[in-house]
Length: 318
Image 1 (cartoon, one colour):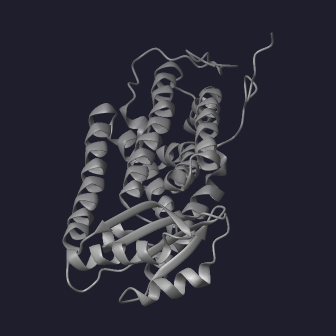
Image 2 (cartoon, rainbow, N blue to C red):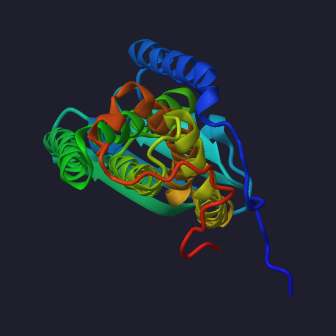
Image 3 (cartoon, rainbow, N blue to C red):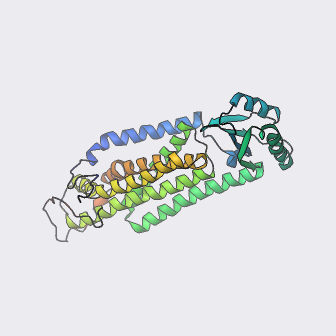
């Protein structure tokens, strides 16, 4: 049986040449993300803002959002957010109520009395203002420490120039992921923090694979122009990159379609992250090595292979 080839063998795509488009595009998108973050902001979940989240399913399969909104406003203080999802699903988000935890508990009791006849309660979460503040601090600290740990690892794993290139790609992916949250207004909660940290790991993995091949080729072809060598690095790992991205995306697509509302936001963000990480490994972090003086660490007295390879075999190629 003939094996499936997502990417043909011996590709010669000029990835580095596309930097004249990819660098301005990535810079423009990053600046737009910063502007939108200041104007629109993130849609924080109750993990960070505090309050009560109630998700219900209509017993007859049809939800009347206007009636639910009217009843929810009558039992709470402040602006209530009511949204319909799926088939007959309704979510009610109630802000923090004056009176502390007892007042938050009363909201749930009143909601059950008002809606339990027509709706089945699927999910109820209550977070107080103190807990939400601690979660904000913990989430922010977790992301910062993870990024610092990645930087330290890259510094020891590669030469400084490679480490800087990988950090550029990773930060690029984080910024664009935040922009995706801003544009889509997907609820930003502790699950979103997990998604960002997972994307950091995936981005690092994609970049390290290409950089490992780059170092291998730099020892083998010492007189090859750097732009050609970087193109060769990406092309010889392209089959592996495509297989990894495809299998991961298919798994995430299954979660988006069949995973339910609770995990759909995480899966959608991760699906976006796979695309962005694959793009940045080929068009951002690798071309950045051209400007980082990466060839300065090569030894001139080592024997050089001046031939231009037709292909470089990749171990473990799918």
